[in-house]
Amino acid sequence: MGVKSFFGGMLAFCGFAIAVLSGGCILLFSIGSGGGMAPMALMVGGIPFLLGLVLFSLGRWRGGRDDGPGSTYGEMTYEFAEREPEVLPESLSVKLRIESMPDIVFEVIAHDGPMYREAVRLREAVLRVPLGLSFSAEELAAEADHLHIVGLEGETVCATAVLVPEGKSMKMQRVAVAPELQGRGIGRALMIYCERVAREHEAKTIYVHARESAVPFYEKNWYVGDGELFDEDGIPHLKMWKLLV
Image (cartoon, rainbow, N blue to C red):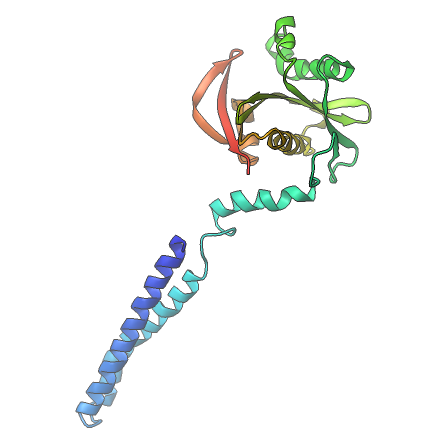
């Protein structure tokens, strides 16, 4: 039973008790006086009787609205669970086409191939060049065992992310969407695909070091902040995670 059901039931019970007691008092007082005091009994006892009926009705209505998909917390759980199968197949294939964006295909690619190098150029342009930085050879070599995700518009890499397996958790990093295509829902679709890949690798949670400017985007995709802001690459970041269900 949810919190609303409990308090709704208590409210209905109190209303019922008040109505019964008030009605009983009216009846007894009227009978005891031989009917002569019936109008006075109705005037005095009628108000609590009506109040009891109102409380009973309110309690019944409130109790029926239990904590579920219609509540704030329930929507966080069920809205995503109901929406995801609309764009994802039952089993993960190498490539995935998002129905709302038929021109975009997501897939896992090999490390150090042509698409990988194009993905590196995209994320470097979006994430590093504005900071006056670039990816070092050592950083790229360390990605050999990571999972590399790309979104393709035709033959062009328009989105990318990297998944790092860490036991039952998966770190998502290097997330980037081509600037001219941002705002079209590609980032949201990329999240769905990365999370599905993480589940296929038996991860129970996924987390990201989000730039402070990107925190609202991850919050819209049900990621929760963990701890305080910290410095990474010279700008504030926040660790954010999500339970994979």
